[in-house]
Picture (cartoon, rainbow, N blue to C red):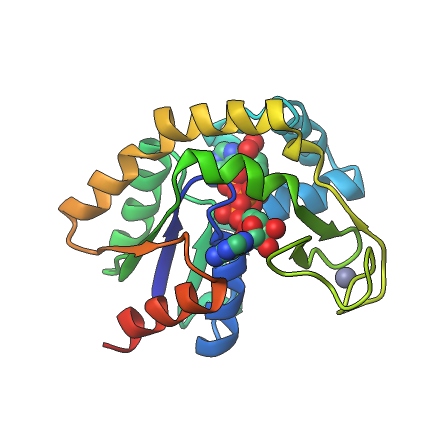
Length: 214
Ligand code: AP5
Ligand code: MG
Ligand code: ZN
């Protein structure tokens, strides 16, 4: 099963992709997470990506597509994957379609998690992430058992550097300009599914499972 998660920053792509990956035993591939891991390790890719990410801008397509293709070549991708944060532009979507078409394959579902902009800024200000394992929490909607401490690995929780309100606003602008057109792109390919992302996160997950198990 090959799934693309669509939705604005903070819509819940990562939260839901993680649950999908567990339930259907496919890898969760998040380009944002791969960039952040590279930043932490201080790789050249990480340094290049940081400059864009801190501004709320997209990392150039060449860098991103190359990185994702490299990830696809790993063994665990044979039975599918859930893509979170990729594709994010029409050229990225075309690169993905072409690579899949060469193997006679295509995306099975593009799941758009719909959340209005007004809700996004609020949600982001409450997000906390684990510095060590990347687990994501929310102060109100998904708090850890012990405040400020990761349930999974016990490391400290921090705010993501691009979750400052002014950066969130530029990310939203970039989303509407460059990523939202992918909704029509996947609609034309007859694989688009929409879910209401304003509901409780377990309800959003149930709606996705209903689609995938249909
Ligand atoms: P990326 O890491 O992908 O960030 P994003 O798309 O902006 O999305 P987020 O991770 O912020 O949100 P999410 O939808 O995953 O929400 P989450 O589940 O965490 O990308 C970061 C940057 O990297 C980009 O700006 C760009 O620079 C670069 N980049 C990445 N991919 C790229 C690409 N392909 N091309 C070019 N550049 C790229 O949820 C958010 C919060 O809400 C959490 O606290 C969560 O607990 C909470 N929450 C989730 N669901 C619910 C719910 N139903 N109700 C209440 N709270 C909820
Ligand atoms: Mg995410
Ligand atoms: Zn952790």
